[in-house]
Image (cartoon, rainbow, N blue to C red; front, top):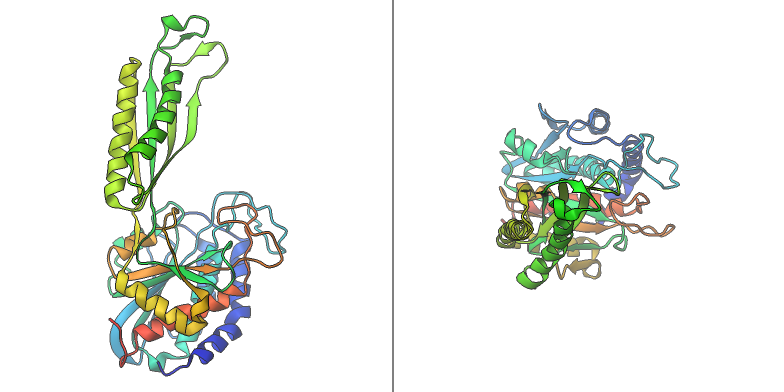
Length: 398
């Protein structure tokens, strides 16, 4: 790689004010789901003047901007997700959300800003690239399968490898962490409806009460996980919804429970869905109730490819120093639709610490989440270093 580590870091530092400006613009106007017109406009305006081939998703607000290197070679995709969360913001930021019920509480605004900064930095080093860089600005990560939509449209068909960064506001600023294999969990949902017979609350013998069965089922699901799951292939089953009844003196006819399933292997994922159905049917039968179990499959396990992860961590150590790089001891039980991309091409995701120094740290998805914007310079440099080393025609790792 002709450009030195110092030059990349200096270039990222020089681009940081522009990245902060873009991040704050997006933060003020968070958008949800797959259609993000204001965010798309902000990204396209920030990319103006760069010699990039722009492809726009026809079904979403997704953008793929491709930088063609001076020499032919493979293509690496760098990704930044763009959507916000449907929640209020309770921070004191001068640029806090101006949209009621929407907040960039997962750092996607910073992901966009870092990726756009990397596009500008890499464009300045086009002559050193033996191949191409795809900058993937993706909507709909928060439950809308945005990455899958972009894959289905063929927007990433030419990609040979992929790299993504996710900020973590409780990790020290500038630290980077990742691991081989399962890095983030799958995320599924389940819904169970128990149906009995309603009646007067003073005469339960004349009814078939679904509430005791629902309560028993919640406990049974916890036992199913703790006694039926390999400790080295963990699963999380959380019942987060219980709905039944309308007033204190009526036994309802139905009770519903629902929740989330997190796992880090497809084997454990399948076994858990089968177990929930088996336990629900068994308890319903014991109480003389009818039952309906619905499984809602979400994002698959995010699996970092071994060789690419080693390559990415080695590159990161060279860029920021080995003392700032951590090999994660265990997966994160959150989920990511970057998993769809990693099912198609080799690549990985890393965590970038952006813990603030002037505020109490709060995790992603908190209404009080803030981040240290200085950490975005590391993200810009890291995106750029990964792409440049991958496309180094003389020292290509893959």
